[in-house]
Length: 485
Image (cartoon, rainbow, N blue to C red; front, side):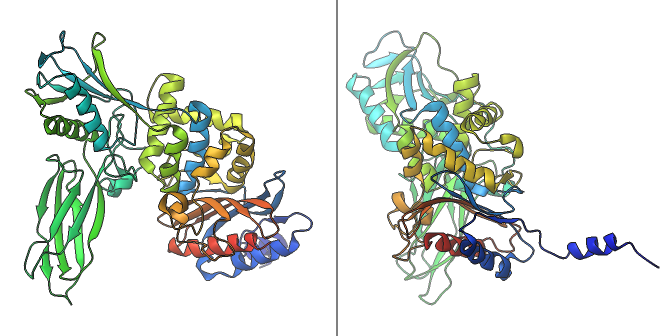
């Protein structure tokens, strides 16, 4: 039987990798070096790569490999969220946490409720509640004959982003979203607790467990024991679904180092209120009623408030440590500010409008959240490099650039998620970029200063990896080539 030659051509082409490599004149050597990595690395066999490299000076595309193909960006999505938030809210924007009462008189014993209102600050710490409690103490109040009412009504009560995997529910990076929330440490992992586990004094002892911040909101069940020096170090920390019961199981050897875990709490609004009630008690102030949720009445009086750091500073832990909850709270805040509704739907609509204003085309993208935790998000690398080029003209760009992780710089709030990567002395400090990781996905997009002092913009999206950790090695190899130009 005879077949048209077009069929043979078609069959032959299906066995070739889909390549779309373009290079600007004068950058052929760069193209060859980058191609060498992409075409020959065995871990990319069966995977998909989208790569876009531009001049930071004029936006000219210097290298393009499938840059128009939509791929999962993972946490590179935060590049879009941060840009939109700076455009909508401004770098000096702050979030307040307020305390009200509906009592008619302020005296030693007041008759009425206290209302703790959150307005989307993801950086509240227990010490901030202590400062608010001190302010009440200074007013001479010792007893509140009423309830403590937690008001998180600035945002809707949808606690998770659209496609957040159920398996991430108890993880700190999948913690619930609330306008009233609290963080355990200055890493600002909102809506979570930090658990430390150390071996006991002798074999057979229960392991020692400490929780930050301390509270009775989370119930600990400790089944883990201390074993001999040569025993296994295997600790499992799990929170029960829809409850605040955390079980610790396994073994820790006598000389083992402490192990740490961050766990998202169930209902962060009530957790925040519980910690505030504790702070009041520590300052000798009692509340006779219960902790409830509700809305501050219009006639209530403002007693005190805590103001967050400005957005320019808040972006540092958000971007450098890749905080998912911050991303989703910023999305809801944009929705509230621009459309009067603190929801993901309204916030994402605002973000798409802002991206259009910035010169990026959201019609080429699938945007489902602000953090990148969704496996449905889909963005071309060329659009990410376009964004990184265009934001350089914005007045808030210094704050944006400052928030990006800096490769090879060990200080946590400088190097962030790149502090242990690209740390060769010839490259360290020359790469400022956002990392991204999901199962089968790795990404890196940002700016690199070359050996000749030129700044290049790059976006590398790697999908369908058998092991996403291998993607980091590929990204580092590609960026090292750029840095050495």
